[in-house]
Amino acid sequence: MGNGYKFKKLSGMNKNKKNLRFLAGKTNAQASLEFVLVIPFLVLIILAVSHLGMMVYQKNVLEQAAREGARVVATTNSNSRALACIREVCSGFNRDRINVKIIPENSSSREAGDMVEVVITYNAGGVSSLLGIFKGSNGLIKVKSNMRMECY
Image (cartoon, rainbow, N blue to C red):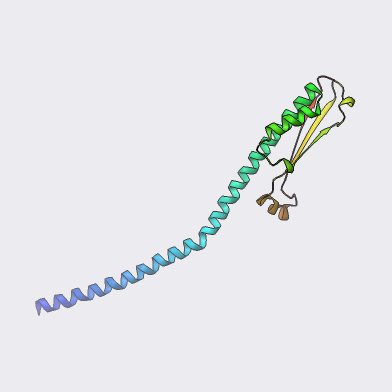
């Protein structure tokens, strides 16, 4: 009775372990399923944050270009030099999407002490154009810079 009883008791424990392993297998499958369902949302959030960072970078570059363009107009009274300077600063951008406006447009109407304004608009495109559906801005980045004319 001694050895046979122990053997039956141990074999019963093995059955319980097999049942527990089967349940553990279900938990692994559940975790895998949850991961598969959650990962697209995580990827979407990461891409949205990186696109937002890219738009902030683009706005900073465009602000720098507007400042440089306004400085060139204020010191040289030349629209063509200002446009060349803006194009140089925005060399990494798609030129078809950039619109530059210098106010006042005519260089002969500017005098020393007058204010000159450089306005740059850029159509960012990409995901930002989708945000235009909710926000109504069509993904446009608009920057402007003002300076007082130093020469005429």
